[in-house]
Length: 411
Image 1 (tube, rainbow, N blue to C red):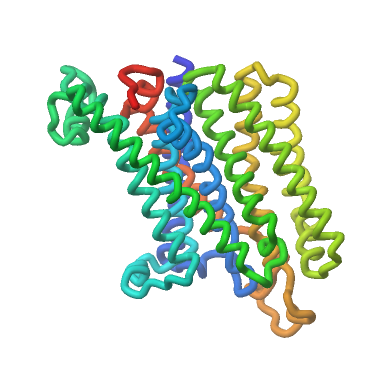
Image 2: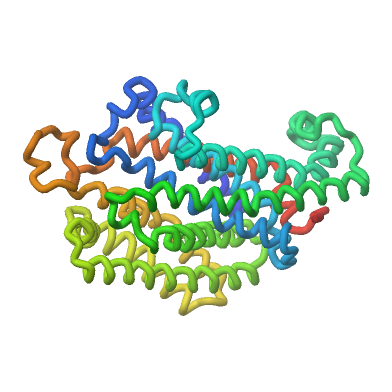
């Protein structure tokens, strides 16, 4: 009953978020990016930060599927279907979010008609769609046995849906199971290089920009990998606890998340140390904005205190208590948007030419004053709510957790 109450609460929150956030979506569809607080010098804002947050949240589930179906690590077998579905839902949410930032949905056909093979964004689109196709098929083959069985159970709610998803198939044989196992394994093997390129290309979009000192550095690709694994690992650990799949796995992944948190904080400290020691003015100015600018509290309070030190303390003090580990992971997930905002915005908030801020004066030519407006917040809320609703309905009406707990689970 407690789990059902949590489900109903989250479902109500998702529906409310869609209703409230629709105001922001409608404004964006009518006025485009003119409805945002973005400008000429800060063209990437909250939506790009949320996109990067979604990107990171996929990494933990992606790693679980690779370990389960490529390297055959048996400990993760119960959570494999849930992890694959998580990757699919989060990537689709990520695509919707970045689509709002790119604008002009009707012009997406130009990626096909006039591809820019030297553009990192072109390859981002290609490999993002490849990941969606791979994980859509992988989820289908992982769940097909249960879908066929459910479609034949008299009196089961949603039987028509299951018959449609199983394409009218009425029997599932051992030969079908072997064939599906092969498909899942091959799709997972293909997803390994595709996924690595997918994450690498997203990091390269930032790392190759020469006039962005924080982005353009040797630490950027490594920080992308660590932060993705940290936030994604925290998400999958939290989900394993919520669905009561295996507390021992929560303890194990909690130790992994703790290691990643320590590594991330060390690399972040190293970035500040090297940045200040180099004496490059624009790099020091960017770091000053993060640590001492008008939104210093995002770094010190939201990121370091609530999102890092408190979770780290819980993970170190209570490594064998699943509920404490889950709370720590929840704090990491909720506060990780601060990490992404501090990565995206401050490097754009520094004027790259001295006196440029005095040449022309317009609020869209301001940098440090940028803060997401109501439309940006509500649009982000709408995308989060849509992803949450899809995830809740999937875990409710698809055999993700049932298969994950070992009922007719194969591969």
